[in-house]
Amino acid sequence: MEMRSAKRRRATGQAGITLIEMLVVVTIIALFAALVAPSMLNKTDAARVTAAHAQINSFMTALGAYKLDTGVYPSTEMGLNVLRTRPANVNNWQGPYLPKEIPMDPWGRAYLYKYPSGQGDEPEIISLGADGQSGGEGTNADVISWKN
Image (cartoon, rainbow, N blue to C red; front, side, top):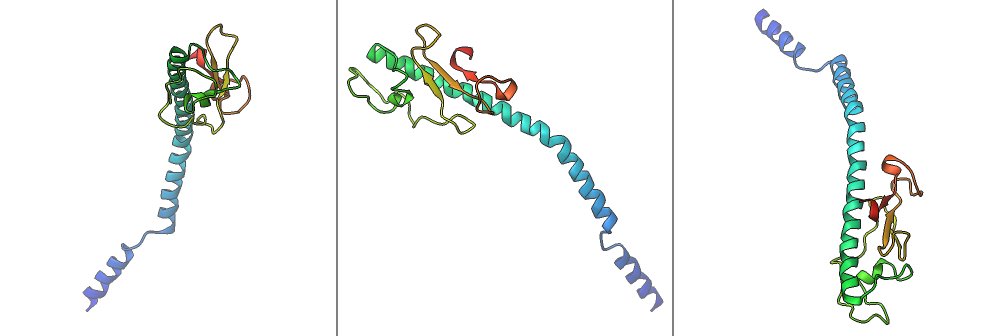
């Protein structure tokens, strides 16, 4: 009988996790998250910049096809929407030139389109970056079609 109670004591003493063990595990997880999270956020920002470059390149390709068909780039007032819907008074429009609606930039704002632009006979497409302001550095820098 004495042997059974000793076995029970040993079994019940090893069955649970102590509060200190739980705090150590939570602390390790918190430290890991604190070290990994900033680098993951930086990768997210870099991915948004890359996505903006890719979308702008897609717009420039579609604008090139538009110009081949119509002879001119759309004006600033016409905007990028002419790549999806036929504008009034434009001959030889063979669109739509994009398979889907014009997306917002990766930060949820509309792309800016200018033609004529300060870049000669090329249109200019701009995403204002993470801060939504003109200029900036890093992820806040503007993504501009002629700087791709």
